[in-house]
Length: 144
Ligand code: THU
Image (tube, rainbow, N blue to C red; front, side):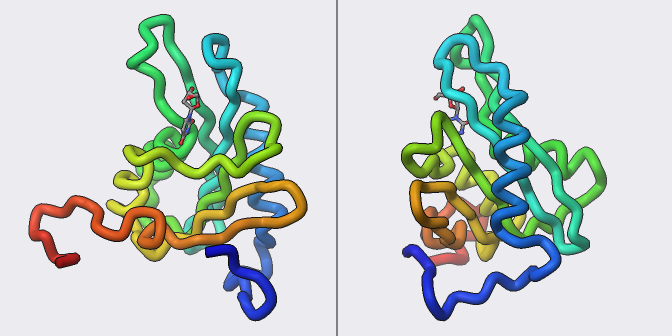
């Protein structure tokens, strides 16, 4: 769902555009010599902290890690477990770059209500993780 009109971003001190700008900064640091597809993620925590992640590829292709997971893992390493939003941009930003399935599961681990902000030409797309992954895996199956 694209939120337009009535949708109010809950964090006026950190506008969506600011978070997307940080994601672009992270994308510029991507290590993606194989796909040449740079992805950047900027994760907002409930205290207003912003943590960046970029994709890091490897000559052994399967070892590549996505930008979103790197941002989440950096958040945990920095002592925070409370993400409220994540902005993602990828490639030349001519199309939205939604998190892959594996990253959705990792995002859902910390906050299924988290907002995902996607850059796209002419509009900003905002969805919740639970919309992108409605029935995420859990040990208790509580979503059924
Ligand atoms: N990639 C991400 O960083 N995030 C995603 O959600 C999907 C894909 C990266 C992995 C790889 O380095 C490049 O994009 C092309 O697949």
